Length: 214
View 1 (cartoon, helix red, strand yellow):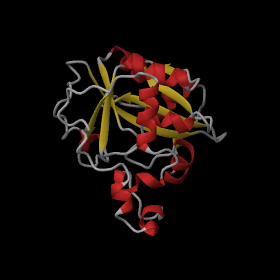
View 2 (cartoon, rainbow, N blue to C red):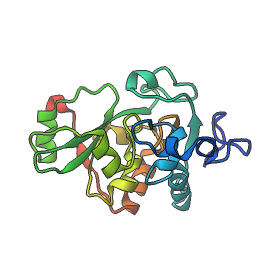
View 3 (tube, rainbow, N blue to C red):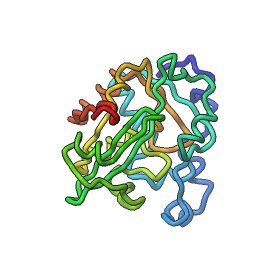
View 4 (cartoon, rainbow, N blue to C red):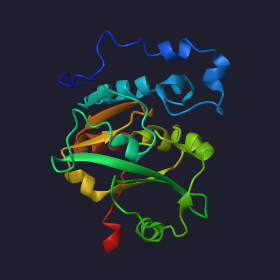
């Protein structure tokens, strides 16, 4: 893990389960109340710290940041301190959890300002009639809640046959910014290291061209 970011976790950071321990168990586990923040990380299929340990085991370098919960791309644009801009090579993303009429599940990851046409996307992934999946299905298949969708959720999606489709232009970025399963943390990782992570899960992403040109 890189140590040059002032927002990176230090030895003074809260214990990984502190927030969860401070809350009654019924509040932590109540899906109706839970949001995508670290406050409810103990109720996720894969704990964010387990994901980070897995990245460490793969010798993947990353920068780890804490911030206010970010529920949308618009929210994330307000928290860009210590991050590269798109012009500087920063890969800021939006993530779409989708299903088709055959109940196949897809995670499509794009540059944040890319306009996405689902009909065009369906042609690229070979699955027409794509639609957005529900929050319950999202948690079941990718192990995250709305607001924390991330390519790193493929640590769960690899076990539930989720197909990952990745904006090919992201591979040209210096770093890609992603949530580590919760939306009040972000990690920055080089595209080649993301591919190492995916390869370790036996995932080869579908690479997507600009939908306007598809």
